[in-house]
Image 1: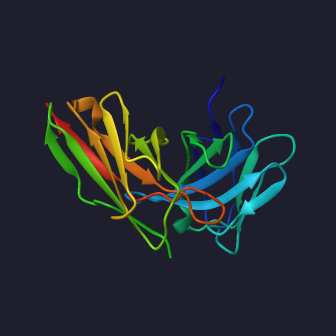
Image 2: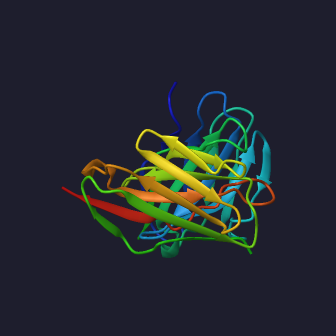
Length: 113
Length: 112
C-alpha cells in the first residue's frame, strides 16, 4: 500500500506565478489535510477536505489560496500570484477517519524567487 | 483560543539516558492527543495516541502520559539512542472539526 504521495517535491516559482501542489492520499483514505511549515517553525493547519467537500478551511489565507479534493484524482492546493512569503514546505496528510492518526507525505517545498 | 506549547529549546542528552519532552495545552480539553516524530526534510510520522481516559501508554521504548488536570502530556524515550535524534511534535485535535493542531515541536539530540 503506497503511502501519501505528494508532487512536486520541489517547486520554484517567480513572484506572480501560480503554484499547484498535488496530493494522493493513501488508498481508502477519504480525509485529507494540508499543513504549511515555515523554516524553524511548526506545522500550521491550512485546510481539511473530504471527497468533493471542504470541511474546515479556517487556516487558509483569504486570498490567492484554494484547495480541492475531487471525486476522482488527487487533492490540489493552488496558490495564485505567489509572493516570497509563500516559500515554505507544504505537507499533505490523509486519514481513514477524522479521529485517527495522520499519514503524511514527504512534502512539497515551494521556493518563490 | 486553543494553544499548544512545547519546549522550544533543543534537548541534548547522553545516549542511554531517558529523554522527557513536555506538551502543555490551554483553553480546552481534548479527548486524545497524538505524538509524531519529524526528521529534517521529511514528513511527520505517527508514534502514539493517548486518550483522556488513559493515564499512560507504552510502545517499545516510548511512553506517553496524559494528565487532564494539569493539561499536560509527557513523552518519554528510555534508553535513548542517537537514532532517536529528531523533532517530536505533540498534536491534540481541535475542538470543532477534529483537525490536529501541532505544537512547535521539541528537537532532541542524543549524543553517543
